[in-house]
Length: 118
Image 1 (tube, one colour):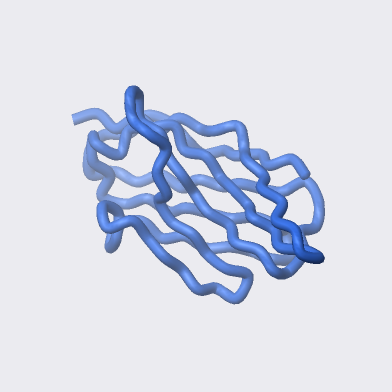
Image 2 (tube, one colour):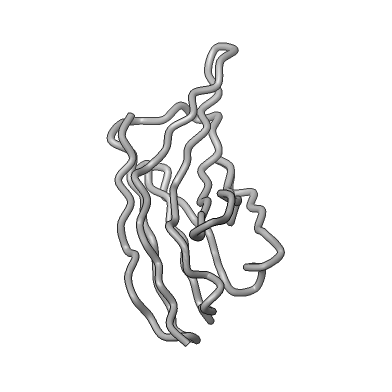
């Protein structure tokens, strides 16, 4: 399974961006789609996740500003980012954890860069 992320770019503080990540093939229904980010010199951190049934969770730093969603028919996950701050600057990675027959398959996208200027 290949994940293709897109939508990153340069935006001013207070602006918005929408990230998308599409899987190249069908994912088994027991799965979680997530976005992580990694800023220079920092560890990768979870930004938001969403289950197949639509249950979401967010990092405290993005609650109320970011919204994760998914289209199961298209095997695609989205991250709507509003009210962006310079501290949101990072490479954003999509991730799918697929649970199937007792195993966990862990897929990662290539990362898309988000830069927020002050």
